[in-house]
Amino acid sequence: MKKLLSSSIIKGFVFCVHDEIGPQPKYFYPDMVPEEKRTSVSKKKSEELIFTFRDYMQIAIKNLSLLLTDELNPNKNEVRDFKYFAIIPYPDFDLTSLTFFYYLVMDSRIRPIETAFSILVKENKRNFLYNNYKQIQKIIEEFFTEFNKLLKGGFISKEKSFLHFNKLLNNIIQIEKKPIPPASTQKKIKIILAGLDDSGKTSFLLAVDRKFSKLMGLKPTRSASVQSIQALGASLILWDLGGQSSLRKKYLAKSDIYLYESDLILYFIDIKNKQRFDESLDYLNNINNILKNNLIQNTPIVFIFSKADLDVIGSTEIKKNIKFLKSSIQNLIKEKNLDFYTTSIFEISTILRAFSSGISKLSPNRDIIRLNLKKFSKKAGAYISLLLSNDGLVMGDYYSYKAENLMEKDKQLESLQNIFEITAPQFTMLYKIFHKFKALQKNEAIFKLANSLVIIKRLYIKNNTLFILVLIDNDNKKEKIDEILSNFTERIKDLLVAFI
Ligand SMILES: Nc1nc2c(ncn2[C@@H]2O[C@H](COP(=O)(O)OP(=O)(O)OP(=O)(O)O)[C@@H](O)[C@H]2O)c(=O)[nH]1
Ligand SMILES: [Mg+2]
Image 1 (spheres, rainbow, N blue to C red):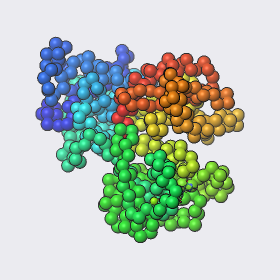
Image 2: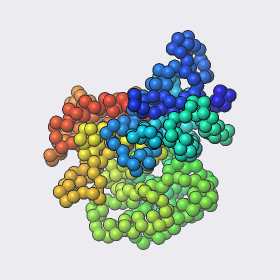
Image 3: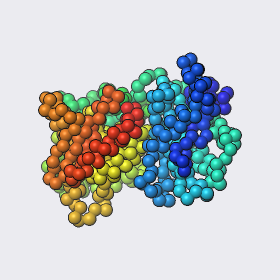
Image 4: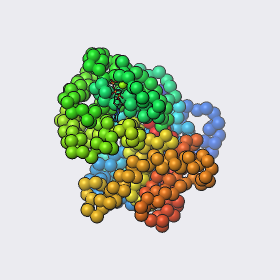
């Protein structure tokens, strides 16, 4: 193991379990050193990890606290499907991990055991994890399907476990051998905006960029226009592929330039223009085939039904159009959980919502942030909670209801929740304005909405400003929120800073 890791980016691993006595490091490498030794050598710039038991323990506690399963009481299916990954920084150790969370089911235990397995890299090498996490995830998941069978009868010896972990690490290290993209400290994300001409791509981008003044007299995009914005701790490179017919042919023919290594595609369809639906579906089909067959890329596609302005969105015709498009797209793409958004440039929040949901798909930490927001919201008794970045992008959301399960009496609640979702960024804006003009001293504001309250809290996380918005039905719950909020932010703060 020593030889394997000495030349690798990966510096160690730790397999933590939540045992009867609490979180524990169970198997780990390198071996721990006594406390005295660490303090004597830690000054030296060592390439190797010098970890005491207490250090490993600290990592185990941090990892497993992100699961906090005490209240969730998982049933059998949940246990089986519970598989989360996250990229977690440990600033105290100058390390970052890719961590796999799951439940370990053992014959001798009644309760499934919360488990977290981390591979550790130096903080300055964390891009290795971001650039390769999908591949590494696959290797780790495959490994644990086998490894868990071994543990079913009880924990195996450390020596025996090392033989297995050695193989796992060896497989991951193979990834290091492929050429590395030029080193940069910031993650670059390539996002493509595609769709027919006149489908609203450039307008969408402008709205994202808050450049509303440019909207007047918009000209068709002549070819690919590339620009970049900074958001959520990454550079987002936005490729706006002008949609005229001749251009479309060019992108498809030169897909190795235009579609290659794209992280996300936003596909636009003008919801009002029924005559061109077939043409648009045809273009989508071509793009999808190239991604799957020629480029062998699994780039997620988010569908934007544009021009869904307030005055038309409720009409029978538009509803019919949406239904038709959803089922046609489903037939073409054949994947579960496709993302559809209706947007209008006259409702900037619909655009920000679609955009942020799209990029949050790229965050390895999205699921674990959501899980923690859910825990927080349940404890607080909230209807909805939203976690927003300073520029209004949704980094996490929680809804206490599922639309399809709603009883008639809950309909009112549902419509209130819908309003909340649409207005959340405006509340944040109001908060900012009040704060700027010193009309607000505190880091919070409360708005009354019918019988409910909207609570906005500003969070400072390492020089970043974030907002959490919570919708509750009575005053009493506010105290609870105050009580549990700092614990919640403490737990997820490192995950939020490096969101993508
Ligand atoms: N009513 C309404 N009009 C919109 C909306 N979004 C875009 N438009 C209008 O639709 C027209 C085309 O928008 P663009 O953003 O230029 O479309 P595009 O997809 O970039 O077009 P190409 O560059 O030719 O591919 C413009 O006149 C916009 O003002 C919307 O949400 N509602
Ligand atoms: Mg355009």
